[in-house]
Image (cartoon, rainbow, N blue to C red; front, side, top):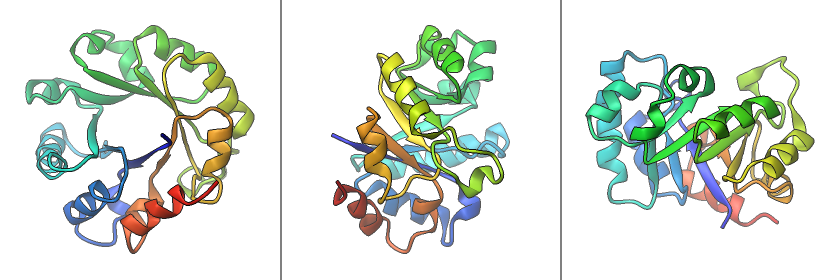
Amino acid sequence: MFDIISVTNRKLCREDFLLRIEKTANSGVSKIILREKDLSPNEYLKLAEECRSICENTSAELIVHTFFHELFEAGFDKIHMPLPLLEENPQIKQKAQLLGVSVHSKEQAEKALALGADYLTAGHIFATDCKKGVPPRGLSFLKEICVLSPVPVYAIGGINSENAYLAAEKGAKGVCVMSGLMECENPYEYVKAFKNTK
């Protein structure tokens, strides 16, 4: 099954953020990565607990981000980490039931895998406003990571319902979407469009 993962950015959200989380959790996405790294650890933990309550009765798996000390203490065990932070804290793998890592090169992918990553997000694949002026790494990069990795790889960066199939062709297990799911009118219809492509 081709997975669609929502990566949050509350600053892009055009309605109440928790309402958008609820709509997204019920839209058919497989995971929601709560990527609100600009919050303080306590603010993030409060938001994560609210999102956990929302996702509990849906098929969307909530994955928390960055603030591992506070999150592990509060019973969260599915976490996504920036590679530099994971390298500084390799013990995270022992406490995480699911560990995701963002990678932007073959060398980073190798390091993440050595540190126990259960999945990788690889990007950015296509041009995106989130990385304005930074050239995308492209589909050949994605294929290289997919061939290298024994764990699932998810493409991120500039993904939409018209190009997602290209990521699948290169071996990606799914795609990550940020702005599209934060800004669209109807998350359910937005996700359905992905499932109706090639």
